Image 1 (cartoon, rainbow, N blue to C red):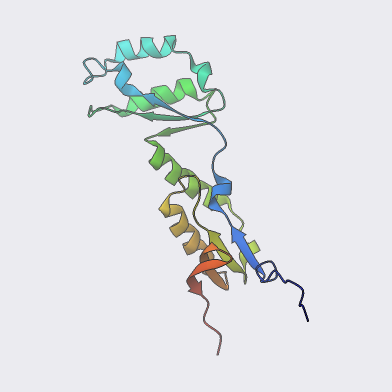
Image 2: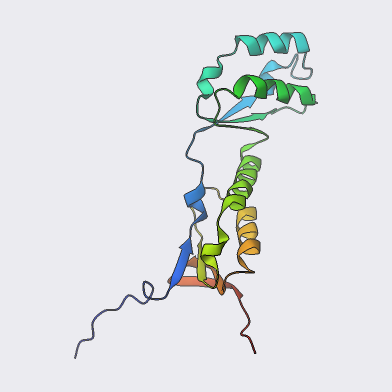
Length: 171
C-alpha cells in the first residue's frame, strides 16, 4: 500500500531565519579621499573645501556612501565630517570605512532592531550559504541574542543542519 508523501521539513515547526533577507537594497558607492589628496599624501583644507563645493552630490541620491581612503595617507577627522555634511541631504546612509566594515556595522544595527520575542521557545534554523556577503559577525551576534530565548538554534538548511545550541531540559 502506498503511503502519501509527507513533507517532514514543512511539518517540523522549524523557523528559518535568513540574514540575507536583511541585506541593504540600496546601491553602495565609494567616495575615495585619495582623489582629493595633494601627491596622494596631504589633504589641503582650502583645496578640499573647494572640490567638495564643486562635487555633484546628487549622484548619491538614495545610495549608501562609503567614505574611505585607498592610500596610506593620514586623513584628519574633520575631512570625514565635511564629506558627511555635503552628502547627508542625498545619501541613504553614510559610513566611514570599506564595504566589509560597513556590512558588519549595518548588520549589527539591523540585529539591534529585530524583535526576538517572536523566537521565544522556537526551533530556529539560521540559513547559511548566502549569495551575498553576510559577515560572520552577524551570525555570531544573532546566535548570542537568540540563545537565551530559543529552544534550539541550527545552521544550514532545514533538510541538513548543523546543531549550534539546544536548551537543556529542565529537571
